[in-house]
Amino acid sequence: MRLFLLFSLLPLSLSPCAGTGVDASPERASLQEVSVEDLDWMAGTWRHAAGGGATEETWSTPMGGSLVGMFRWTKGERTTLFELMSIEESTEHGLVFRLRHFHPGLVPWESEKNGPLTVPLFDLGDQRAVFENPDSHERFVYERTKDSLEIRIQSDGEPLVFRLDRVE
Picture 1 (cartoon, rainbow, N blue to C red):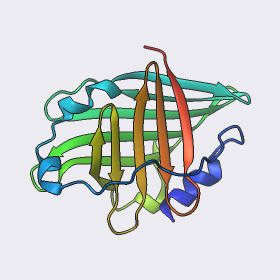
Picture 2 (cartoon, rainbow, N blue to C red; picture 1 turned 45 degrees about the vertical axis):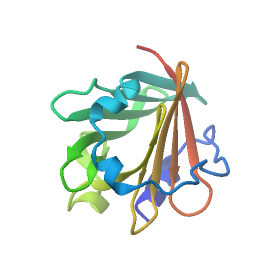
Picture 3 (cartoon, rainbow, N blue to C red; picture 1 turned 120 degrees about the vertical axis):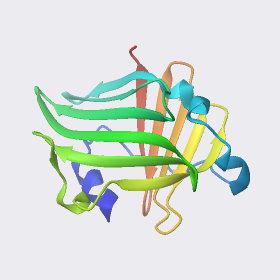
Picture 4 (cartoon, helix red, strand yellow; picture 1 turned 30 degrees about the horizontal axis):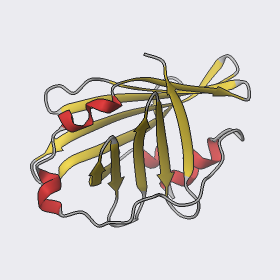
């Protein structure tokens, strides 16, 4: 349900793609030993412009056991959505992805007033990270290929796919 609100805001130029490409169940013990340094390939600014708008995602370099990210969505000359994200090392769960949505003015979404969406690392490959909520099966897949970052978000039904090109 939480992702439904985001999906309703997506521009028509972003289309869902079938399948997530994730087949194997990882061993939790090895995932708890993963460090944010293993995600240094995400660092940088990534952007896609289409249909009179643009999406942009920026990730910091790993430092102090975390990466910090920002997502911005614009339509025309106006920003319509912000997201603040972190990937942090947790002694209990290994890496954890946290996401919080904001309207312009940094007004948090009502559905997230009790805290951010928190999703543990489910699988890690070469320049590919999968975060999945074991209770709801919400899934966030980040995958880098050359100078592109693909982000797949799946809740119920077909995933939404963002393909962003490296800017910095």
